[in-house]
Image (cartoon, rainbow, N blue to C red; front, side, top):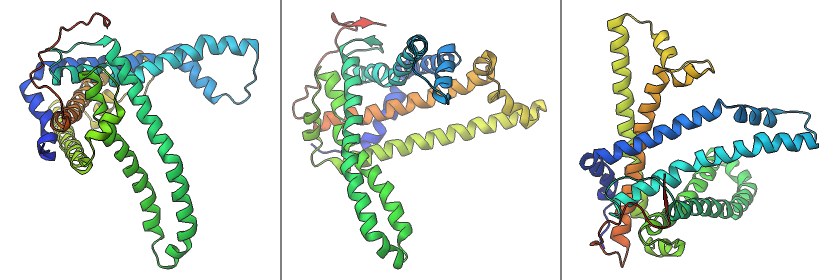
Length: 315
């Protein structure tokens, strides 16, 4: 099938234009996770975890083990959930709607979410494993070619090529494995090699589509920040508020509840959640478009399933 990077990069914005209600629901879900993370950071568990990380004279004892069990393990479990919740709970909900599996957003703790969790762990593992031999080769090339590059004045170029090569390697694996996510939701199975085969020969188109999607999202975010700043400047001018007070209103430096959940921080969190919801929709829609175009056997006439599957629990 023909694959258009431009078409793929714009699918998310078309979805946002045509289906604003689901996007609003996902924005609220991301906002709730943001608030939960802020509340967790204020909890004694998180504060004790920071103390344990910065403690200088750490000695193992029975009391230390009890302290770790009461503070470190719960804090680590909550932090792990909050870290993966947006990817493993919100993202499957977006994929289900965009693939026509459900008509409206739903949030579950079921098989789809478990598959997404193992998928993200597998991608991180693949990138890490691939980076080890690549790092060895890069180190050897620097050691051998570094003196020559220094003589001809290309040491700066050599230093730049290293990070760019690592970034390209990571992008390569992510792009080649990206269709595993819609396969996991659409076909209810993890098929990493299936994504690898489907993206064979389409890497550059997928890379261009993803890069364009991120570029459009960055442009929207930049425009929204400018608009927000102009409104803030106008408000300060009309009401005669000093600029420093407005900055303190939006970004308080204290560590109290009001400093994290006051009107200013809440406005900022709503703004950030809206931009994050747009980013999720744009990236997921790009991947879904690629899956539909590159999948050899997808049936486009599949009707949406019931919102609740027998083996899953609705949150």
